Image (tube, rainbow, N blue to C red; front, top):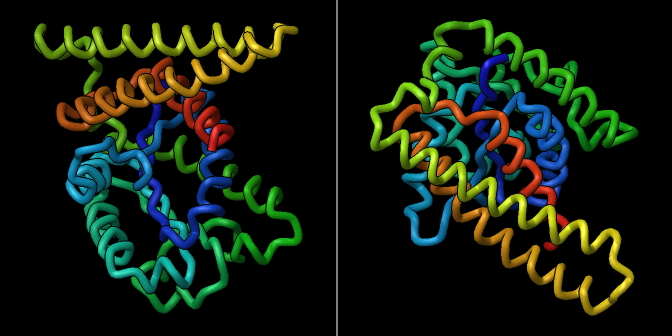
Length: 252
């Protein structure tokens, strides 16, 4: 696969804890360079969150809807669903309902779509939540391969190298900042892992948290510019995003 598939993750805020577990499993696909994703928690400070979400919703190649009673009861989540289905209908995106909690979803506009997990059994109804995640991840991986082979969806973005010089230079600078910031985090992680000095380890932890905020800033700038110019995000940047998500989940 030439570049990661862009995934949009939509869920109700009431399902935030379950969604975080879901994102932890998605990060495995991101670390493998298969996807990069966006969700409502990634809007940068000072940015209009509705405009930012709509921009990503309009550019994503796969749209995952975490279906629950709270999702279908949310006016805004329902609007996101309708917007996603419009793109699915014209063939510019793939919409996949993920049945998170039990709900009569088949009577909704999603009823004609193939859901995950298999047979539409809600994830919280499985005996093992990990097995439910495994089934969903398998289905998403199949969708990634299918979308990558679909020209109407996968060929909609260009490589950074094809941009005109000034825009390409901006991408290269942001990528360089990201790589440097990520390298700093890895250095502090080395101290955390191998140092016997508790003071050094405490300082390294603070530095990781500070550097992660800076890295998130660079990453948000990169992703926003990529969406504006319809540019594919390279695997190495997607991997930084996945690692950063893992760090942030540990800190929180």
